[in-house]
Amino acid sequence: MITCTKNNFGCGPIEFQDYQSDRLCVLNGKFLIDTASEEYKAAERLEIKLPDAFRMKKSAVSTAVLISSSEKTRGTVLRCRIDKGLLCIEKLPYWDEEGPLTIVVAAGFTVLGWHGQFTETDYKQATFGPGIKASNNRLVIKDDFVYASIVCSEFPSANSGYGPFSIKINEMPEDVDAVVPVSLQSGTYSKGQVGSWLGVARIQGGYLSMHLDEEASNLGGQDSFFIFFAPRHQFVPRVPGVGKVAVSTEDITCSKKTTVESVLLAIGDALGFGSMEMAFTQADSSEGMSFTIEEYPDYAKYAMVMPVLSRGDYYNYEYCVAPQEVSFSEFNKSISLHNMIRSRTRNTKVFDTSLISDIVPVNNMY
Image 1: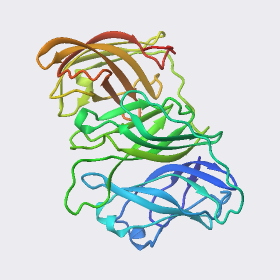
Image 2 (image 1 turned 180 degrees about the horizontal axis):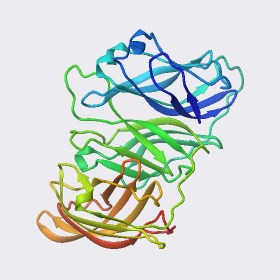
Image 3 (image 1 turned 45 degrees about the vertical axis):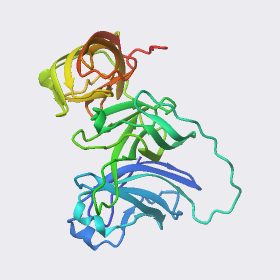
Image 4 (image 1 turned 60 degrees about the vertical axis):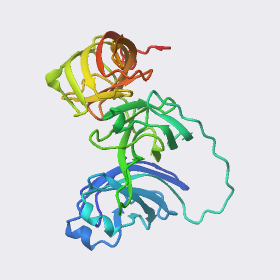
């Protein structure tokens, strides 16, 4: 981790997870820019002073991602490079009226003017928990950093009941803690639209966690994608302890697309059991639903998963049984239910007790 205390656009200290070598450096972090500040207005480009001991002084071009505060959180990609000990990021005045701006750096920087032999990089095909499937898929895992380029054939969508969600990347090392810019596809186009719909996800403990705007239309889904670098070994996973938490209807906030009639969730003890009683209604719940809880359990990991049974109706046929995957995410302070067999249950009741897989290891749970 490095902390950069000086910049030319009026921002406070900026922290990056980092990996440094003579030929490649990796930075991962984000910061907020006030476009109304006089320092920002005077800057021709964004300059962040790197620590004096930073190993790379001059790099070839890489990328940063700008996410605006526009109604649809549109944004674009920016040129980014290291130049004489400064992290330099392109400034695009078009977006000044859409501030504050979030800048995400999840990039690798290679030394400028390298002359030498290239070697082929080995990569894996990432696999995911329910909710994501990849059509184009590269995951590179090195001793000190990871790189991923994932184009999705399936991805959570605001049209399918998703708000906050947390999905396992099965091959992702648990020592990665990274911000991930995500390009969210949309079937809605406005005349004169500039940029792409973007969001920020977080990877912790092997889980990709994100919040989709449930009031948006056609946001997310097929052809959403993410590309990022992230260092390893700078994240200390939380050690689960012993504790209990009870959640009732008064403790949750849900989207307008879902009506929660009742919920009673009790999780935790030394054995890692969870119990859920819940009744909710949606116009169409082919994928799932989510709600935000007031307080995430202090003793739990950054994400947890447990399977439960539900009962609901399918085109007016009552009592259809479906397994739900309940996922917990500290990043969003949320709980999501994902229908594992795509049973279209509108009026749904959940009542089950289960083991929470990431408090007590459970092999071959399904």
